[in-house]
Amino acid sequence: MHILYEIRFPTRWYTKLAMALLAVVFFAVLATSAIAGFLVYRIVKPQRTSSEISMASFPGRPEIVNFAVSGQGQREGWFFPGFRGAPTIVLCHGYESSRGELLTLVSALQDHQYNVFIFDFAAHGANAGITTLGYREVEEVRAAVDLLAARNDVNPALFGMWGYNLGAYAALREAENDKRIRALVLDSVYDQPTQMVKVGVERNGLGGFPLMVRSAQFSFEYLNYAHREDPPLSGKLIAMTGVPTLYIQALDDPELAETTRQMFLKAPEPREQAIIAHGNFVGLNDEDKRTYENRVVSFFLVRLPAVGKSGR
Image (cartoon, rainbow, N blue to C red; front, side):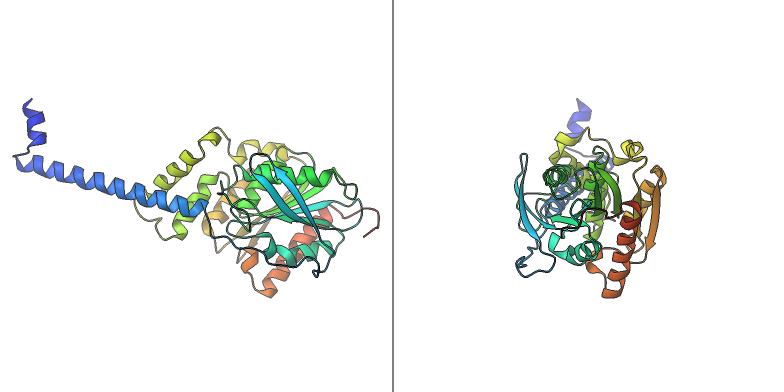
């Protein structure tokens, strides 16, 4: 009883010091949790950029295609036709990006007779909602592939995918469970969405604060509790045996460069690695962008040739 009384009404100097330290720790944890919660809100609700582009005047004869994603509503995609019966390349944009920022890559692929498809993920472009950094985005990729495979002008069994960070995670997750995906380009891929949360915290300049990253990751995991049993991508990489995959590491994004390197080391053959000085395709200058496009197109030409019946 004396101990409890001393805790409630401290009289000794060391008890007062201990209680003061406990109070500091408590408020520090409370403040960290509050800031981490706000950061996670900012991460899962990124600033959206809408693509105001007239498809009627855009070269390549694109077609607007709508498709439904179970539990997430409608999505709009742009289909760019290549050779009739040729493989289709699905481009999966990155976090805080949109389909409209990939049009030069679309043109580079379509010029080599590939069918190309782009769309916006949830919380990106004109789409509302929140991002799960890959957990649910894979359902959007799957719905897009199912839609395309039902067309009579593409090869329903031959798909390639390109993705950047968020898009790379979703593309690889789908490819691990979908034999129609026959070639992949993964730029700045991560093994688990919580790794992208860490990147988001660090980009906000708060990665150095004690427990900030872990608090943000805990909040994100709580929001996505339904996916608590989802294994990391590396847990099923063996399923990619025989599927050519190009892993791109950007040296100016060290955190994602390291996650990509680790994924490459764990990946089965056939695999390729490309190390570039600057990442984020949409932010590259014209010369670097052309070099990047040539690298991606060359990979697909070798690994997934654009063979089909002419009819474009």
